[in-house]
Length: 199
Image 1: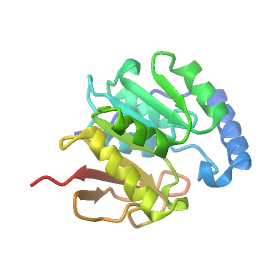
Image 2: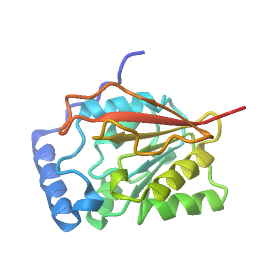
Image 3: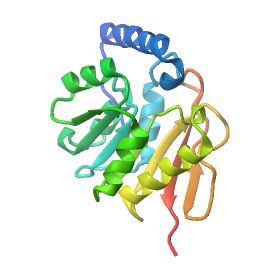
Image 4: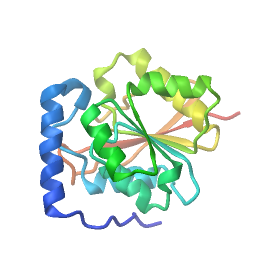
């Protein structure tokens, strides 16, 4: 299977998104977790690892300016089947403008995912760009378990990290596999794919 090709984004939009990202980093560096948007190479790898196809329902955590969102849509996922969870109000407003048919939720991803589980929500994939290592380990594990509860035994949670190790502690009930290092990203990143362990 080949990687998804994303249409070239205009240079002006790229410059504007970089400016927005730097502004968000200045407002809340730990929450933003990076000084630059994800590269298209990383976004494509995340969509590939999620095994996306048309008709799938996807929850994206921490979409920022929408680089990974574009890869999700390029894989055939409809905006109507996409939930975008963004803590930064400026980014959330931008996402709502760019993807008007998607559902954009502004708030804490950990709480929102937990509420979706409690409400009996379902999805086929959860794709996360959250800077998980800035959060305590129990929060990271709870997020992963809740995400896997949403996607069930056949779905996946996909998370990228700049670290060489998994941001979620591997434990009974969680299977994980990591991608090769993606050098065409600043900084270089690795994508982890988590699935519920089945008997």
